[in-house]
Length: 326
Image (cartoon, rainbow, N blue to C red; front, side, top):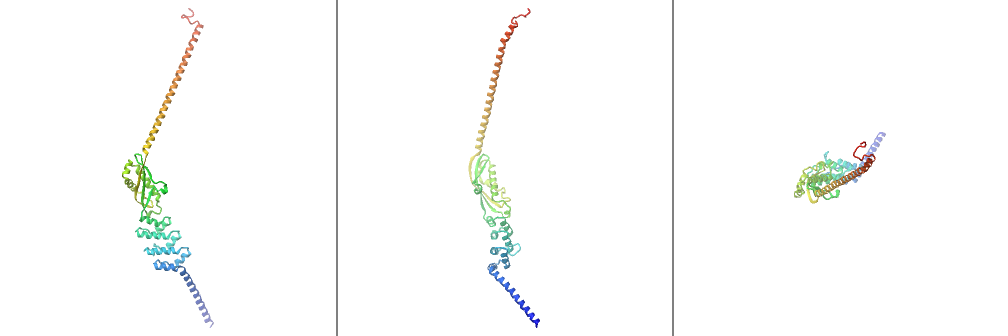
């Protein structure tokens, strides 16, 4: 009898424990559905396949679950791969969020690239986003090329490039460069500043090699084609579509000014040489005058010796024609 009572008590305890455990699980499930049920149902209805355990884990990992769910739904509705290992899975979206990336921006960029038939996978898009580039803007620029002013007044404060042809005439050029984003080189590629610098340098070089400014004014497209053929977009984040000369103004005749300055300098040099020769002539004349004065002094000294010699002759009785003993 006691054995049977003991078995009954153990069974009751087991049933009570099972009820408590089941109640606890039910309570946790109820709380989870109360907190994340709406998002889970939304994802399930959209075919996004977000598990309840993932939503609970996002809460403890301090991940904004609505961002991940909305991104997954957007990817699923766009027909992107959300099931395979290399697809847009919940774990990969969470990892990108925790790394500080913009999840929604990445998904929007991938969808836009897919619509435009541009090869852009999640890994490359996430890498571009984490590198600090706006991946959505990069895709938009790939579809709709942007125009860059050369020079850019916002960066350099100048509105035109100044170049001088071989005939010495200054040309002031304003150029517009149409570029599209090169997604393959967006990471580590040079930015717009490099494009502007390369295009400006090439235009100045091309105008400088022209025989006359009139040739440039007659065929400005020759300059743009020459510059475009140089492959200035190498190792940059952009691909140059076209280079257009927007405006050309004739500036100063630098060559004539330089020739005039050179002529004036030559005149000054000639004047300096003439002044030098005049000074040398004056110095020579003064030397000659000093020599004449010296010779006159010597003549006076010689004339002064004549009376002295005569006096000495009188003293010595040497004034006669004969010898003293005759």
